Length: 192
Image (tube, rainbow, N blue to C red; front, side):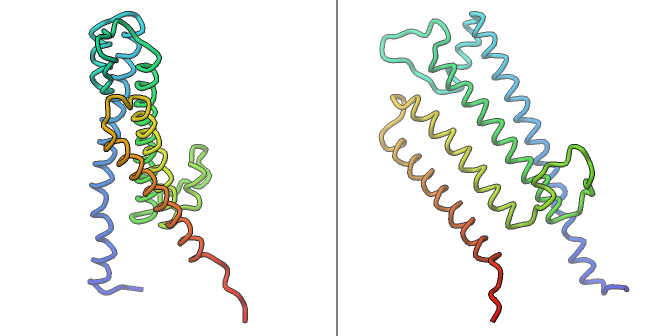
């Protein structure tokens, strides 16, 4: 069966998203590079490299209590760096969900059935599932940011602490609303 040119053009326009997904793959490569740079600085600082320690302290925004010099890694610095690394991993996971799930949902099938590395969630992905998964990933990322802020709370104003907490709560409520709406849309219809 032959379709008219306009529906063919409209259907083919989904391929315009391909450069966007390729761009996200490049963004993920930048995140991988950033992760390794921070990890190398952490390892170097653990072995006493003061330049690496200074880079870590700057990157995490840590400021010690007044009149206290940073002479080496302490538990707070390690915790903040590890949380920053976890944050990069979680954002990378979010990127994978968007790239793989979005491509599979909106552009073209990947035909991964039976592939040993096929993600479990991909077998039942659709726009609704993707929205809920993205919302929960964003909550996880927000939780890590909030935890980093609270660990380093003395370097933030009360206003920043309050706003970050409020924004996190809004993310939570939004995710719950998305999940609830999705559930309502997929309730089995009652027979009359």
